[in-house]
Length: 92
Ligand SMILES: [Zn+2]
Image 1 (cartoon, rainbow, N blue to C red):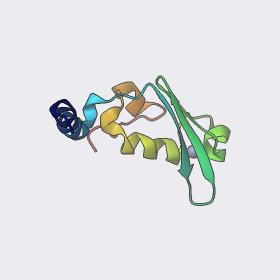
Image 2 (cartoon, helix red, strand yellow):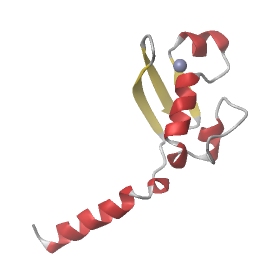
Image 3 (cartoon, protein in one colour):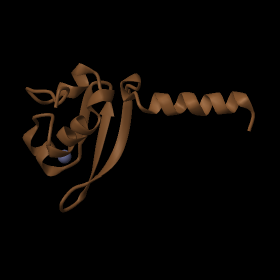
């Protein structure tokens, strides 16, 4: 392996320890709930989930969205962290 690649691998290792460098613009994940799989998406600052609670309550959040906000807190903007909820997991 050449030295240029070795230094890229070193840099990647350092980057991977600094998740705050990464900000999601959009994603779609399959979330294994207790009973069913759910599709959670982020587009800009808006989360959606196809679970019954999210769709029926129209509150813009659900346990799956809140779990994603908690999982990815350091990689989400303040708006994304608090989307659909009157609180944030940023400091949790
Ligand atoms: Zn949900």
